[in-house]
Image 1 (cartoon, one colour):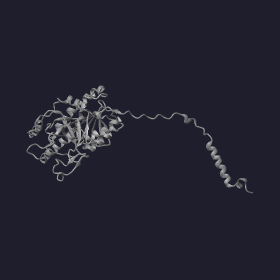
Image 2 (cartoon, rainbow, N blue to C red):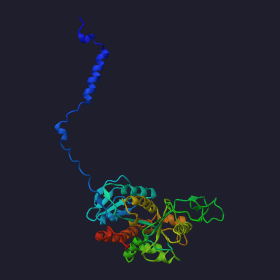
Image 3 (cartoon, rainbow, N blue to C red):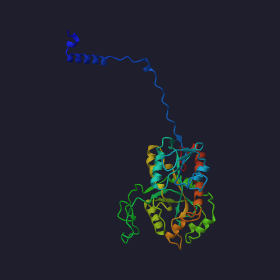
Image 4 (cartoon, rainbow, N blue to C red):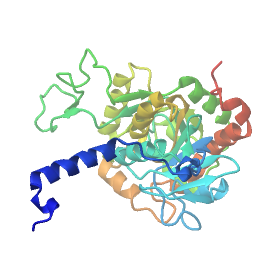
Length: 377
């Protein structure tokens, strides 16, 4: 005899099982008492470190201390930047927690400076919302404006890369150069287009404050400088002992040199600044730094109005009478130790002497300068 449950059709068994499962699903499930206990507290993220000044150098020679000094070494040693922070870029960061001064080395060129500054600006470990940014590096100087070993505060930064170019051997005969602005039909074409990376105007009040504070700094002198500047007959400013001045910067990834390119740099700077800027220093990075800070500023992560650019003259941007541009450029690059770029050691020292006076003033009066930019009401 077949048991009763074996005689029930399988479809009916399936329906019964489905009904039972549905009933179980709809029934309230008792909550274990342990589930009502509070969850463990989540550790709060560490508070970002407030930075008062970021010193921006572009290169270092060898080690960060104890050997020939590039742009960063004197800052690290004398400002006691002893706390190291790993940084996913060209060079790690160094910090003094007592003073709030942070030092960085971007690497050479606008691509390096722009990416390094942006990476730092977005770094959650630091509060840079009130930080001042001091670019302190060496450069070539126009002998019409200053001598090697001198220091110049820039109010205008002009980019020497964003442009159209036709090789000079193929350009129209009436053109002074084959280099001309985008959006125009020839060199220094008018109307001048609005700059989209070709020019950056810094805070003029802050620049002037830094200049007034440091204009009387004694930059010293050296026989190497005296010998070099004596060659520049007919350029009275080039023959002066080193001094502090205001003068603007042209940044280009190509290391250019010579009288004709020096004339172009002056006209290019005048063009993009509507005649307000004066080309003095030639370097490679400063428009990249300014570009990143201009992007960061609206977010509140940095303040573009607190950017200062100080360049010091390691060499001249053109040859002296009696030499060709090629001869002079090669001579600048082949000096004895301490004489490369004609004034490398003196220009690195000048950058620290002048720049540190501004840094020390800001740090020692942080109660004032944290919320009020120097030179402004």
